[in-house]
Length: 368
Figure: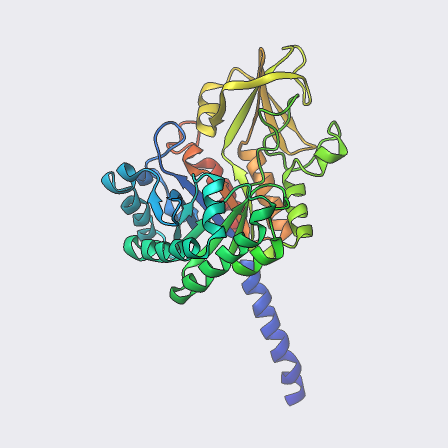
C-alpha cells in the first residue's frame, strides 16, 4: 500500500500543477491613450475587468532624465490619472503602469548615454509611481540605433534594480522587427514583459496595398515580406533574436489603415497605390459605423479582412481577425496579448456588443 501512495501522490501533484497552468489565463495588456479626439475613450466607459494590465500613454522624458506630463491638463486637471487608477476598484488584480513615450529618440539616446541622467530618470520614475499610485513603468523607446544598444540595457538594468525594491513592474514596447539597436537577450533578462508591436507592416512608404497587421504572410508577397510583415513572423524573428517566450505579449491594433488605389478596378492585395488616405488611420468604431458601403473581403490565407470602395482600400481588424490572433497567441504559449489601443474599440456598443474586440480577446485568453 505504501508503494502505491509513493507513485500516486507524485502523479496527483503533477496533475494539479498541469490543471493549474491550463486554467491560468494569459495577459491582456491594454494601452490607454490619453488625449483628445476620436481615438480616445473616457476612462469611465472602460471595463477594467477586461485587462490584466493597463498602460497609461504617455508620460514624457525630458533631456535631463526627469519625467514630465505629456498632457498635464488631462493627467491632473481633468483627473485622468485618478479615473484610470479607479478601474482597479472593479478589478483588484489590475496593474496600471505609466508608459514612457512621445519622447524624441534623441532624448532617450542622450539620457541613456549619461550615467547621471540615467540615475535621474530612475529616481524620477520611482518618485512618480509613489506619488500617483501606479504599479510600474513601461519604456516605449522606439527605434534605438546601434550606438544605443548597450546604453538601453544600462537604463533597463538600473530601472529594474530600483523598481524591484517596491515590487514595481518594468516592461518594454518593441517594434515589429529586432534591429541592430536591440540586445534582445539582455532586454529579456531585465524586464517583466515585452510588448511586441506586431503591426504597421505596410504604410506610407509602401508601393502597393498590404495588410497593417496580417497574422500570416501572403503568397503574393516576396519572401522578404513574408518573413517580416505579419504577426507570426514578428514573433518568430524576436524569438530567434533571443526574446524569452513567456515574457512576450503579441500586439494587435484596434484600428485600420487606408490606401489610395492607383486604379479603382485593381483592388486586390498588392494592387498599386498612390499614397495613404486622409485620414490615414481609422478606429474600429469609425470603420464599423461609417464604412458599411465598402465591399469587405476576408483573406483566409492571412486571417484578416480588407475593404474597398472607389479608389479607397482599407486594411482593418474585426472580431474574426482578432479571434484568429487570440487563438494563435494561445497556441504559441506566449505571455499574452497587447492592445493598441482600447479607446479605438466600439466602446459604446454602437455596432454590437460594447468593447467587442477586447471581449473577443478575453474570450480566448482569459476565459478559456
